[in-house]
Length: 476
Image (cartoon, rainbow, N blue to C red):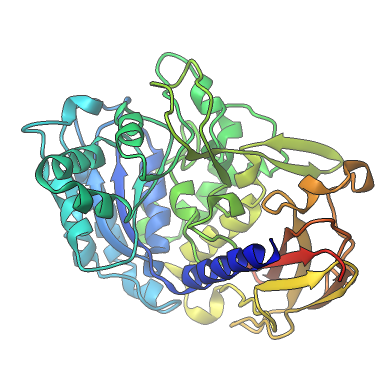
C-alpha cells in the first residue's frame, strides 16, 4: 500500500514539473460576435500569449450563432495586438508576432452542431486541427472551445473514416478539451464515440432556459452579473466601471477592442486561466484546482438539460467550500471565483504593460520553495515549509500566506469532521516565508495540498503560488 502511494506521488511530481516547464499547444474554437464575451476573452488571451504556442484560432458556430462565423472580428483584434506586441515584450519575452497569429486564423463550417459533421463537411478549421495533431510533437494539444465544438468533431470524424483505429486512438490521446458547456450537440457525440478523449465540461445546453448555465463551473468567472448565484467574491471587479478604468481607457489599441459587458464578463476565459503558468494549476489534474476552476472525474447522472446521457467518466463539476466574512459558500462556481481578485489584478497589470514602460508597471513575484513540491512524512512529525528564496522583479515587499487547500487531498475525507470543523490546519507562522506544522494522525496513508501565496505590494498587487503535496503515512 505504502509503495503504491509513493509511486503515485512520483507521478504527481512529474506532472508538477511538466506543468511548470512545458509550453502548451493551443487551438481555440470561438463563436466570436455571438455576444461580446468572446472578444473580451481573446483580448485577455493575447496578453498571456507569450506563455503558449497558439496553433489555431478557429471561427465557429454555436447555439447562439447557428449559420455564420465571424473570423473578421479575430483579425480586427489581432491587428490591435500587433500594435502593442513589442511593448508587451518589454515586460516579458516571447510574445508572438501578429503575422504569425494571423496565419493561425481559420474558418469552421457555417452550420450548427452535428449538421456540420460528416461527408462533405470539412472546413479549413477541421483540416487544420488534423494538421496540428499530425505534427511531430509529443506535447498534448489543448482545444479551448468557446462556442460550438463541431469543428473538432468533424476533424475526429474524418480521422475515424480515413485512418487506422490505432492511429486515431493515438491522436485522440494527444487531445485535451476544455469546453464552455455544450453550445451544440457535437460535444456529447465526441465523448460517447471517443471514450479516451480528455474532456473538461459542465454538460448541458442553454436553449430556451437558463438551467444548464446556472449549474456550470465556468460562470464563476463573473456569473453573478447575470445568473445571480451566491458568491463571496468582489463583484466590482467584473463590471463595466472596472473594465473602463483597467482595460479600455488609456490602455492602448488592444484595450480599445475590448467591448463593454452586456451579460457576463468573459465567460470563455476559464479555459485558458486554467493553463496560466502561475504555480497553482497542474493541467493534467483538473481535480487539483486552478484559476480555471476545479473538476472531478466521474460519470454525471443525466439531467434534463443534457443533450444525451453521459456514457463514461468526464472531468466535470465539483464543489469548493469557502468562508467569506463569516458566511459559508459551497458551489462549483466557487472553484473559480475564489481566485478572482488575483486573476483580475493580473489582467489589469498586463493591460498596463500595453502602455507603460517596465519601471512604471508591476510584474508578478517569483514564488520559490527551498524543498520539493512533494513531501512524505509520518503522523506526528514536524513539517517545515520554506519559501524564503522568493523574490520580486520590481523589488516590491512580499507577503506570504500558507494554507490547506482541503478539497483536492484525501486527508479531510478520512478525518473526523467534528475534530476539524473549520477544514483547516494549524500552520505556525502561516504568514511568514518559513512556516511549520505537525503532521496529523492518520490510520492509512493520506495526502493534503498546501498552497503558498506570495503577493507583492505593487499596484495592482500580484500573486504567484507554489503547491506542496504532503503525503502522510501512519506513525512508524
